[in-house]
Image (cartoon, rainbow, N blue to C red; front, side, top):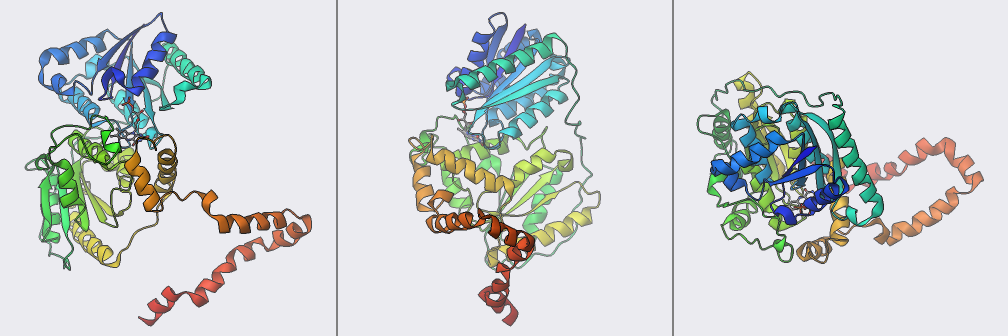
Length: 461
Ligand SMILES: Cc1cc2nc3c(=O)[nH]c(=O)nc-3n(C[C@H](O)[C@H](O)[C@H](O)COP(=O)(O)O)c2cc1C
């Protein structure tokens, strides 16, 4: 069988992910693996017809397409995303239709599932049968038990292909087009000196452009900047040289833009359009390039609004991605152009602008939910563990900002929990406690209601 490996790592053959592919290849000597360096060569693939044709011919000849990619910023690298866009722009769907597809990634397991969801959705959009995914941690291959699992994955996807195994589509097709948004008149909000930055990649004449303009009307002193004008000359190369001191090898102005514009804003508005099952590759490049900041929260008590053109409700995975981009900030809302009623969109833009200013003045931040809480723990352990020797800037930041909040360091709590556990181990104590559990759990809150200074202040005001 012929397997066409589409490598998403900008590091090319030297990538970690490709070592996993190499292992698969060695474990399956009866099959032919052809690797295409998609992300490393994206510029040539986009501009040179012969490079595009060479990839197309490898895909055409293959029985199985293996998407092989690192996880970059909770998704595939921007260069790979651009390749997916090219497939649809250049009507390459016929090359893939009827084939089998599978995906393999390496990562530190931070939102790695998003990559496989995306690649499954894209495989299905391309008319392929998706045979399965394998998401490895970077160093998994050093252990025999993981090597065995990788061999089994290879066996499974190859037999799916040879047996022509059936599969049920998991991600329905996404409708195209949005109702036309015709902005009406909205009044500006009082910004109280709060600085707003609107960052967008709107095409001229698009709904997104109209929404961006309307947002700028609502927040009159807002600075509006197109992604084309922030100095990005290319995608993240994955070199990780920034890990030592947050200095990117690019000197194209992107990092200064981040420091001077993004970090200085009180309210940040990201505006983009749904392109296949994500935003554009330009947005992805923006997110990837922010990796020069390492694994630290991107925002400091800033308020964020996301404006989306396109059928976001039909791509729930993208909404999940967008809501988990925002470490350290507060997501005020996500606004889309999906409603048919333009005045509803106007009203939401106006009220969201007002809420963003108010939240910024109040210092409001919603409590983190599972993705942020779990994500913090994954990154904390990775930075403290395997990443520490290289990601030195992260280590300094985590130490100085109290992000190494391991439970085993909470000595007082550990001490009291130890005695509490001993007590709870005694059968006669359990007998007494069990019927009173509900009351006992709610009881400590009584003290808050009578003693809370916050409550007293609010009641007085
Ligand atoms: C720009 C960038 C972004 C990354 N984002 C993530 C991420 O969101 N989640 C994750 O688990 N790992 C992330 N990683 C780690 C890579 O996925 C991991 O190092 C992977 O093994 C690299 O594979 P490669 O050598 O094939 O490129 C990121 C690495 C880079 C350079």
